[in-house]
Length: 160
Image (cartoon, rainbow, N blue to C red; front, side, top):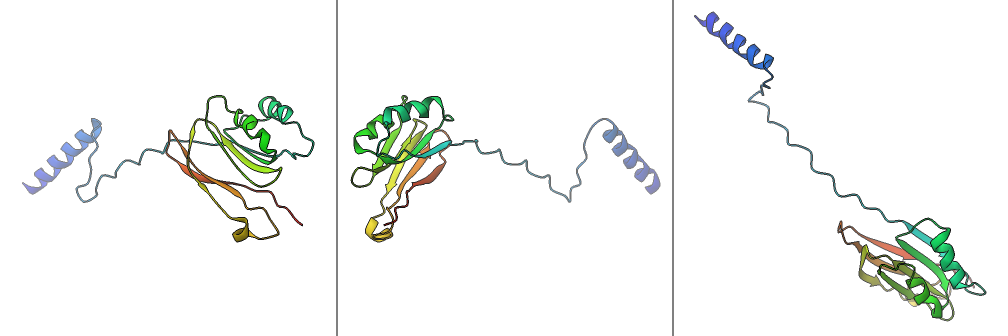
């Protein structure tokens, strides 16, 4: 009788497997499906020292728009204070701009409307490296769609 039951169970299992049923061992748990991938976001960042002494910001803006890869963020060095708003217009859909520096040269970071400014990180030159370097300009940005956050730093070494 026992042989008959064993053969019947084996036959039943073979039939079920042949019909496309998957038989799981009760001692092995069914693995969980892999987590869904996070949404992919990327930022294209273009950095340029525009060398304010003698450069024409309108020409540079035209070159940024026509000759350079399309950027979602631009980080510029040596921007004349009177031209900061000119570079802010690089992103016609909005976004933001911030700058820092003294005298006729400013560090500037501008971003398109895909990003929100979380905060601007202030680094005092006296704390950074007095007399040797400019303090960097740092922004903390958040991508609106994905929620991804990152810090971006712009700096230009200045040796005396």
